[in-house]
Image: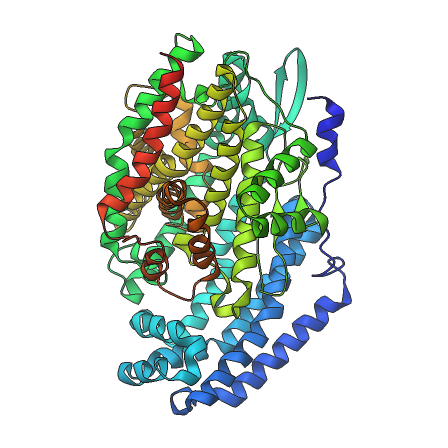
Length: 596
């Protein structure tokens, strides 16, 4: 791929004008002022009255609550999209801080609504949930009944929101600012380059093992050099998390994430257990890859190394064509939705010096199409990432028929369309590939992505469970955190990969465990779920597609158990999760057959 073809991605920038025109757009002040007024009016109308409302009056209250929150969702989305593009701009940082502060105050004015809902007698809540007038809010009321006992008083909830701004949220902001500020100087192919974190980590795909290993030493050296800060951030965020968890009465740290998503601990324990037992797949794969690479040492810096003579690269136009062709081939509606994202400038693709790393899809309200954020560098994994994030966008488009309460997909199912979309593209490429080396390259990329999404996230989740338990009883030192992380690395990789010392600091570079504790299990959940769904698609063909669409259309309007039951699966059954593991095993066997 030429420099010019990669440069095409530099011009792929999103247009945020359907949100706001800039951080000084006068509509921002208008939105905040209207939000404050609407919140006060809502409070004046409904405070201390929720339990006395008729079904019809409660419908009106739900709709007015949504009308207060929707503009704020858009404003918050805009602020964080802008910040993602330039994490070093002080004016943008000040803007984000201002929006967060204002929204916290407005949210405090209306949080009584959910608290008063939760305080309604359970029998009365059940009666309301079954009233046809409230059919659009049935599941919301059912979930309120289940979660009400974890609510604090209104004053306590307000205090929690306000103290977070200068407490755990401030620690998270420090984490993001510090990690995004890193610039690294490294010699690559005879040239000295200055790279950000995403660009440096991309060197794990370089064909020279010394460059791969040097890059990762440089990367983790920064985290080790700031170990005092990262250790303090992690301890304080987790300590705060568990202090509040205990006040609310959650039995376990992870249950704080599960209860609101209508999952029980036993289901996730089954997920963890099944994945733990399948670590042998990871070890089997990396023993095979070491042989395929023909290297004496297989370190963690080498796990994404390209196979010899397979350093395939894609231009932006190539990636776009591959993804759109694959989506249209699967389903015309999928293809049209993805096309809309390109046509309406909803994607930001280039790598920029002050742009945050990674990729994501951002959705705010049902009436606004999503935005996709990328750092496109032309690697096969970048094509997969494009498909993945567009899958999230398609999911949001399908669920946009719902009101705001049900629009955002429930966390455990948030990866359904994204991972399924990746599989669509993988199968397309495999079907069009006839030489052995290219097929091996595709299979290794897919398997490594699977292991990263399932087993790696499972490892992170196990690390979280262990550290939360320890920090609940006292802070952990940097060496203790490193030791605990190394234990999880060894469980996953066994002796198939050499764990070099710098990787002990990898825990400090994982933003999710700071930003959203116990979020990571959802990646594994979603990945194994989709592998099981995709297997069903391969068995049923086009007859399966309507089931998938119904799952995506559900948003968060039903429990995850009921949504997955649309496809005939039971989340509580270990055999369901084993079906996902078996699908990964079949890909590994396909790769093994190419090297026999």
